[in-house]
Image (cartoon, rainbow, N blue to C red; front, side):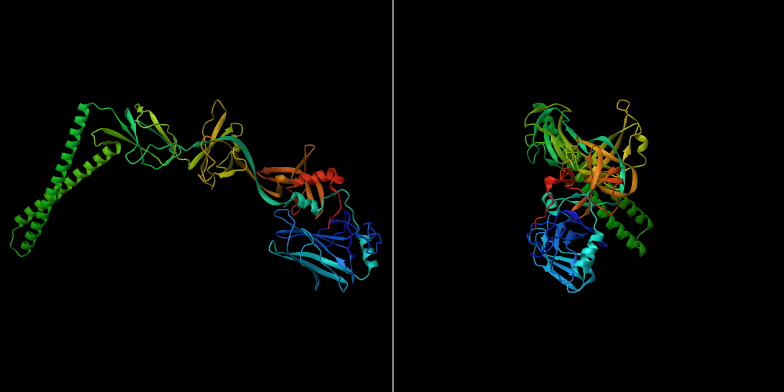
Length: 543
């Protein structure tokens, strides 16, 4: 076989690309094929695309020599190997093709190059899973084996202090990388908080009189958890009445109806008088123009018209007042067909019924709370800020609300977010030595409810950090923070860090990692274990 067997050693870097820790090529004339390193170390290239990580290995190229190129491809989003597709390796004008992977994540285009020189390299991956084009920088093709061996000997570099972690091992743990980059980070003051109902968005419905509890005329008693609308009938209260009281109630109802009829009669009479006065005034005014009526007659017609208009206005006002009284009376009470007085209980706000537990027919007392309604569409997050930390809270700072019962949920509050600016209490509680800082939150998450515990992370300082990495990239060893930086596709460097501000899942790095470098996040702990016990992880590729 003309391909090379690879062992884990570091190789020379090419211009514009990183080099990979790879294995020395075995001379193609190895009679035993036992993998003994007889030739120069192969070349390694690491390149990052938008969606794919490439690690390419190949022996130093010689004009006319048949060569295998080991192409390792990983999905950056998942850390999984690319399992399907076609790879085309461009070396100057020449193309080498692998129609499919030899195994998950590994493609092996094979061929020879007819001319020596320096050529631009490019790799194209196409397939249903992912499509990507990666620049490989400059690739060198030597005229002879002797020239290739001499250049390889001059360029050999070893990184014995690095951590070798092969792509096959990375795929098993789904290793993910993150690029260190500048980012705005915020120093946050974390304080305990509670979720409480907004004032005016909770209401209790009590019995106005003592009596028997009955369902509303259009349905049954509501139950806990029911959504009610403002003004909805919830129940009826029927106070106990003696026969004499019932008779008096019926007499009052009859008197009310007679009064309503009288008001309607008076209004109809006023409207009739107005029609007559309007017609008479028009007739006399027309005669006056022709000199057939006197000024005195016209003045009398105008007075009659004004009196008729006033009478109609008074009738309409009496009917309106009667309607208001009828509406108020019907909104509070109603009379059943059997003549019993009943008081109507209505929901003062829209929301969810959180307390009921009542049964039809039970006796209730005056002012006894029967229903409780909560509108949970908006809540207050009330944090308790120590008096010693109050100087840090200036202006109207935004914050993040978190909830111990819902790990991972972080809701922005204040500033341009829901609820507007926060409100800081002007006084300190003498018992707890804290002041209340209140934010209002429009609740899109059904899991946030009044009564829950919370924490507020209040923004107190903003920093434009030069280097920020995810917190998951930090590995603690002996109380010190470290990160594992990918030097090339299969070599990581252990770096001690100096940490700055922490903002949620992101941490400012003041020393140890440079912007643009890639650090291991998911799987970083496994890389650390590989550094501690390299023998247990092995070094051989399996191609």
